[in-house]
Image 1 (cartoon, rainbow, N blue to C red):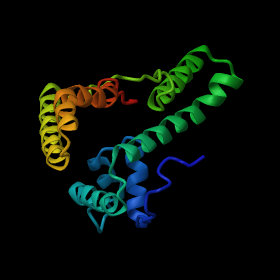
Image 2: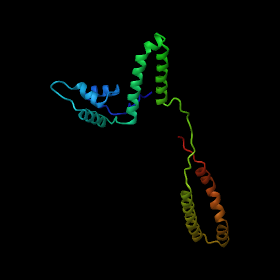
Image 3: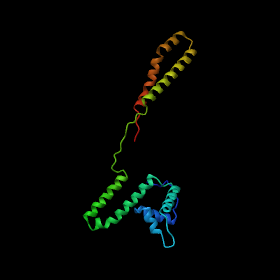
Image 4: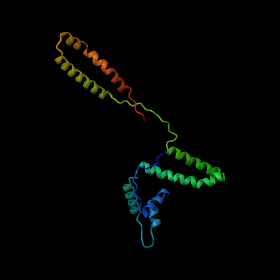
Length: 186
């Protein structure tokens, strides 16, 4: 089974950007990150931190819903790790409750509670139906004139002219059923 984001190109962040990302995953603000990495000799600007992270994310094409979902899942997994000893081994009810909430959030993010549904979508709208009917009528009329130009026997011409509309209607019944019953899986 493929891992989430496996198809994304591998672009490694710089050491500083990796540390900025780690702090962002932990919920730190841009200001707090800049303050944390500032020294007596070097002041880090929060806007610069933001630009460096955005530049990395843009280059790696990971600035997407998928990457955000992965980051949120990593955060939630870290919460489970932190709560595990307290909840499971020490049997602390409050921590068990908190851990269950985290597990439910993970399940919700992964769509485990969603039912698989099939929605019917009308593939052909009213305006499209009229357009298709006009097209088929035009093709049928052109085809009938060409057939009548070729057929010379009087009995055959009369029979073709008399039954042409019925034949077109019969020929279009099955395709029309396919159009009307078209469904799309969502």
